[in-house]
Every structure is written in C-alpha cells, then in structure tokens.
Amino acid sequence: MTKTPKRVKRVLIVEDEPSIMRALATVFVREGFEATTAGDGEEGLAAALRDRPDLIILDIVMPRMDGMEMLTRIRRDGGAWGKSVKAIVYSNLSYNEKHGEAAGVGVKDFLVKADTSLAEVVRIAKETL
Image (cartoon, rainbow, N blue to C red; front, side, top):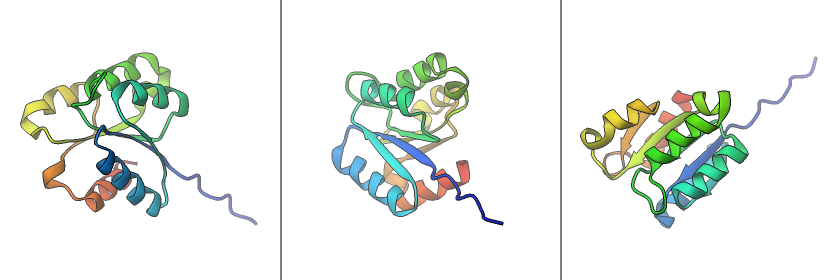
C-alpha cells in the first residue's frame, strides 16, 4: 500500500517591511511550508482570496489597508474558507493596544515582533495548524 504524500501547508505573509517579510518567508520555506508574500493589506487581501492559504501571518500597521481591515474583509468576502482561515498577528504594536480588536476578527495569536523570534513564529504557526 502506498502512502499519499502529505499536502504542503501554505502560509501567506503580509508585511510592509521587506526585510522582515523576506526573513519570515525564508524560515517558513526552510520548515517545509509554501510561502507567499504581500507588501500591504490590499495585496494581502487579493492574494488571500485568490490563493486561500492555510494560515495568514499579518502585520497590523501597513499602507493602503491595515491588517485588521484586511482580515475583516477576508472573513466577510471569503465564504466558508474566509470565515475559518487561521490568522496570526505579528506586529510592533503591543498586545494591549490591539488584542481586543484582533480577537474580534478571529486572530488565533497575537505576537509582538520585539518579543518573538522567527523560530517562535514558526513553532506557533505549526501549533495553530
């Protein structure tokens, strides 16, 4: 009997700081994920609705559309997938500043960049999935 290969999990990284976006994408790919990126909320929304990733890692403060608005639109416009897709905030804002708003749109975890290593982001992503 042959085993069906496990499907690679897809992560969308929405981050306006290019160096952080590249670092996250690199570490996720090394850990066996398929990673796509977007540099702002509008690009992130389009990529999410098009590609339907398993997980979204998103910043809050971004140009053109912030992360909370992006996730609100995914929840509204993405059908069953949009209502259930897992999302993790990775932001410079403190947990106290935006946690309530993030929880209100179904964010699974809220990570503060200064307090969370890239390895921890991947570990938490794996636990979330």
